[in-house]
Length: 637
Image (cartoon, rainbow, N blue to C red; front, side, top):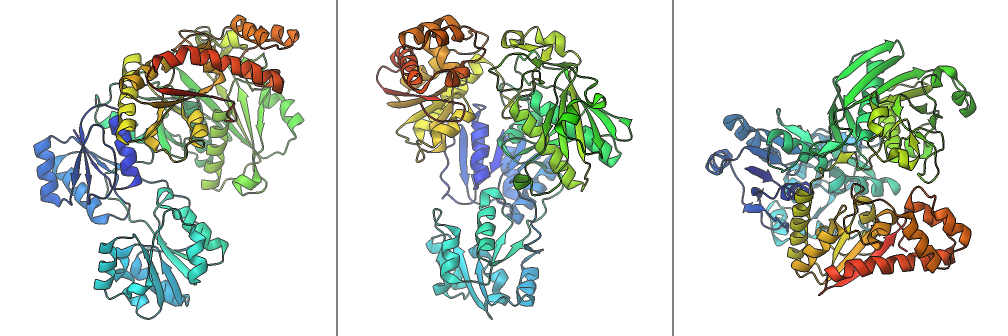
């Protein structure tokens, strides 16, 4: 059994992760004000001292503690640590994502240090964004200067301030939708003081607003966590940690994509070169901003400026043909400046590959540094070569998709900045020793990818594929959506399509959005069983062409794109004969977006959606179904 301590954004996220298991757990908050839907969780409220916590854990058979409380809940953190030590129960700390510490900010070790620095800097007017409970801690400042506190709009907050002797007329209330600059422009403070509360605590917005109008920023550093906590900072990391500490809680284990493995191997190899120390693990940033650590099975020097690292692909419980294979990265640093043509023709760089290198020069506006090193990605043995258009990748280039390219580049640049290293060029040669053989068991040859596998993955994480487990998970998510009282269920194939459809339904709660993966038919049947009246189906072209033909499970193991069927639709839509013929040779369905003219698209995609509706709508006989077709940019047709 798991006991989660929440009351924060991270607490709600921990609930979402725990609910995926379909097993009971406990969710504890100090107060009852937080609204959170726990499908399988048992809600607790009220603080626990060490005696109450240890007693509860013993009585309920708690085997894992998850600390998802506010970073400044120092006493709670310590109580959890003490209970963990007494009972021998591991603790996962669900930490927030924190931006790097800006040198323009005045950082304070504690509130006493903050008062000293405020006085030293001559701050006469201060807006405190540190919460009502910090009024007493800043008393030595506000007794002598103009000061306002922004607090939550609760009667208890006002009473607490009055009890501390603070002028209630100087209390301002927090409004979630209010622009941070509005209050600053009304009060004209010399400075603000806030806590290092991380991205989910609105830290970035507060600091940015103050800096934009020239207001000084003082920040109380987040307190250190007790020793022994295992820290993660995202939902993927939390699930992986639960799988590690409490095997069997989830029916299936998650894994890593080849993109994450390639990134980790690249980071480990570069760090080996720069630190002169061989690495046994690598921490990488995923596309969603969270960090995860992967095991590095081997790391060795090749030369003074080159090293090789290997990461074993762990697909979790997903039946992936790449599970257990070696992803190898050999990284070299150089101090020579070369043009793109010189890089492509440099034998030393390309001697191990018959594909054109990927040259990444970075974006100074994004990375904030001039003279950034060039990062060159090369596909070695076992990495496929692109031979056909339509994949969105360069012909004759390595089969390294855009998301992994970006992951590798951003992680390597972050490591260079962290270690203050400045080579002119970083070359990454990726290889998969068994890739040539493995690729024969994939669809790569059919897609025009020759000689190896692809480095893929948009999220960096592999969700385990099991029809029964996945469908059960869908059911639980729809039950949660219904419990929130949402008037519409929005189902999407994944995170990418969800981001696009969320813009159309901005007022719906997060629980209203459910991923169907490939199980469109099963998802609609569940929605019907649960009497959901309004359903929106967001779908991208690759799955839409399969659904239009009548395939309600769109997994590539069950069906592939039928070009002849698409040619029939094109003919009925009045498309030009040469384009109808060309459709018979396309590699991916998304090529239709650029192949057809605007008028042809209108007719073709309208007919395609009619076919989708013909097969999907009968599964929701008592509800209203809307289907939204999305292109690669997320625009709705």
